Image (cartoon, rainbow, N blue to C red):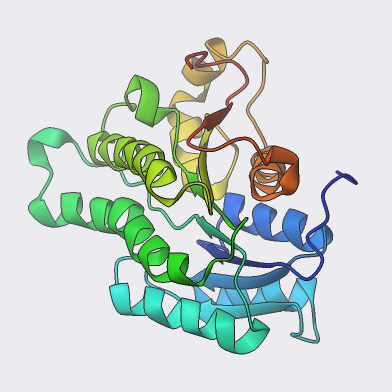
Length: 249
């Protein structure tokens, strides 16, 4: 991706220690970005930061609970303090838990919605006042936002549908100064869905024209594209990374 250069630009990435998050960090760092890596698992986020940049000058980790609005405030503050600016925000923190709707507790519903949807609002609301003209936000939705989710994941599908609608509405409100887009991954091989693929992987593969599952790096490259000037006339849009399993607009 030699046409993308993030030199002197700063990306705040939440959920950085996850499968897709760590791939986004690696791809964007490799394109010259300075990265604030926020994750609930601070140990893994720190290991990722050290692996990318042992000096700490271009990659810094921070402990982060996406469901806590004060953590969003702290992450933005840490980014500005450490790097002096903020150019792009990628709210990637999410959970994917199995609970049947019939037995789902209020707490189980609230946990998924608070991390996957409230968390996107929290970090965007705190970051937008500091983004320069030309800054971007790239959210992570899911094929579940477009076609419904697999059984036992109604809360996940609802949260990602909310992210999709949030992205489109926010794109209109902050234009033309800031661009806001979303990436909707399909079935991507990451630790978060290992159990789901073990149980129902054959079913998902049978409806994927590409004939394989996606990789986290393939999602990360699309995120990098949407953060970059290469996508300068794209806002309020969704790019599907799903091997053709869902072909909606």
